[in-house]
Length: 386
Image (cartoon, rainbow, N blue to C red; front, side, top):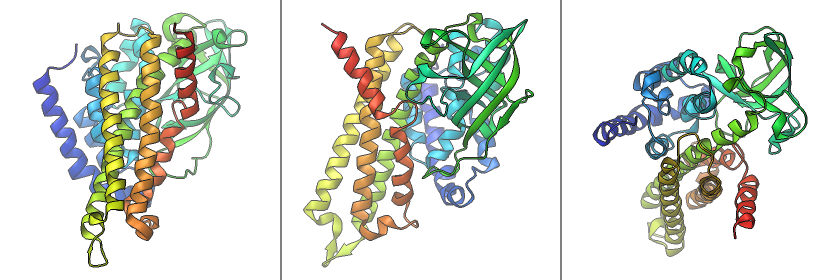
């Protein structure tokens, strides 16, 4: 059950105010400390942001995809580290359990994920398996009522904060059919974390390697209770996550455009505002047009996503999701580049927000499926159509 329009309107207004009054003013602190303040994380819990996509029966808010995208767009107007704190709970960390988990798994984990008591990460990528997710090497070998899991996962978002991982491991032979999904508590013996990654941008986000050396995971933690379904689970999860990130990209593009407009209105050269120069106006206009196109695309695909049966795979919708992720992540990069150009030399200086946003948005074209993977999804779908 989703919330009604009036309740959602009030929630969206609260989130917009939270972004404007709490997140944006804290951006410089996050950039300097590489940490999201604990007080802000507590306020996120109080607002229910960790449970946006989790049904009300499990303590979440239960938004549909269209509603989730509207809030992701709002959250995208602040430094992307803030959204990252809740991102895995709302998306890739929780959705495998929600879509394919057993009733017992849902009852045990989803309420704690929705409240923010439990941070859950999505552990798919490995040192030798990124875009080629079907080639993962992490193994889970059955031993009585447990699986012994060994391997390394790389660039795992929120791993340093995580209390559990939705983790993909190989239980069978080669290829996608041999992959299973597990819920792996972070405190199990044999599970250790690498040092935090030093990244180009998005300071305040937390990623690192996850090492597993003979970790004994109860067989009851096999998502859905059936081996060999993990790859399908991962792909369904990524569809929703990619659409969410498309909305985030649009929100950040809008923030960069507003920063650029403000600068163009106050910066003067040759006796007039630089925004009065036609070449600057052309850059602003291109950014506005692309943003409008991207945000319209996200809203339309989100509507179609909500129309399909919950948890069902739909190749047509998956293709449309890939189009949204492809276009919006690339669009945000172009808007950021123009933003730096409009600022001139100031855009290359860390005191201006567009400099850090330029670095931050670069990741949008890489995680949860690179631009090239989205092109492959769309191209293969088109070649299958007649």
